[in-house]
Image (cartoon, rainbow, N blue to C red; front, side, top):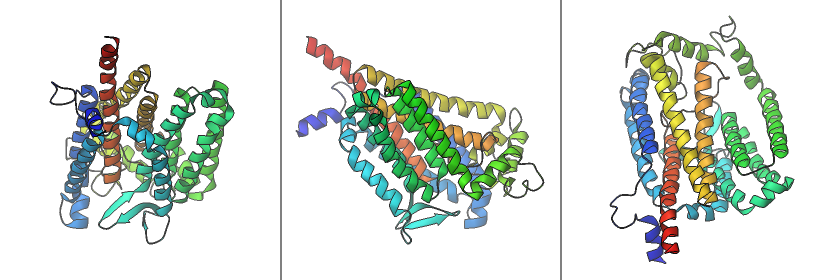
Length: 393
C-alpha cells in the first residue's frame, strides 16, 4: 500500500522533477512577483504611519507567500483522488468554519464584518477556505450523480440546497462578494457537468433574482448601488463614493505608461485599502494602461490554463479532476473580474482581493493551493497515456 502511494506521488524514473505546465507556472509566478512589487509600493506610507516601518506589510506579504508556496508544494504531492474521497469531510469542515466565525470570541470583526477566525497570533478568513472546499465537494458530487444531474431536476437542486446553507452563513458575516464568487463557480461547474439548458436557465434566473433581492435588502448595499450609478454626485463624492472616486483618479493619473513605480499619489492616504482590495488601481496609476493590460492578460492566461487542463483531464476520463479544474478556473475568473470591475467603477464597491496580487494571507495561500491542485491534475493526466500504452502492449 505504501509503495502504491509513493508511486502516485513521485515522478516516473528518469525524471528528477515532475513536468509541470510551464505557462501556468510562469503566469502564476509573474502575478506573484507583481504582487510583491505593488504591495510593497502601495503599503509603505500606511505601514510607516501605523506600525513605524514602511516594510511592515511587505515583510508579512513575503512571509505569507513563503507559507503559500510551501503549502502549494505539499498539496502537489497529494493525489487528486484523495481530495475526492475527502469531499464530505471538507464540506462539513467548510460549514463549521463559516459557523465558527460568527461565534463571539472566536470570530474577529474587521470593518464591520465577522469574516476572520483568530487562532493564536494568526487570523484566517474562513470564506476563502470554504469556497475551495465547497468546490471540491461539488466536483465529487457531479461525478457520483452525473446521470441524475443531466436527466433530473433533483440532480442539481440537491447540491444547490447545500450551497444555500453556505450562502446563508456567508450573508450572516456578511460577505456578499464571496456569495457571488461561489455561486458563479458553482453554476459554471454545473453547466459544464451537463445540466440541461432549461434547468440551467431556471437555475440562473432564480440565482439572479435571489442575488438582487439580497443586494437591496440591506440599506448599506442599496446605498452602494446608488453610489455606483453616480459616485461623483455631491452627496457621494466625500461619503459612500469616496473610495471609488479616488480609484478612478488613480486610473486617470496613470494614463498610458503610468507615473512610475513608487510614485503613486493615491496611496498617500487618499485611497483606502490601497494594498488590499484596490491594489489594481495603484498598479494602474504607477504602470499605466499598458501595465494594466499586462496584468489582465496574465489573469486570462491563468484561467485559460486551468480550463484547458480540466478539458484534457475530462478527455482522459478523469471527471473529478476535470470539474475541480473548471471550478478553480471559474473561481479565479469571478474574483478577478469582480475586483477589477470594482476598481474601475464597472461594478458596485465590494470587498474582494485580487488573486495572487493583493495583500492578505488567506487569499494568497488558498490561491496558491488551488493552482497546485490544477498542476497535480496536469501531472496525473500526463501519466494516463503512458499507462494505456503499457496496457495495450
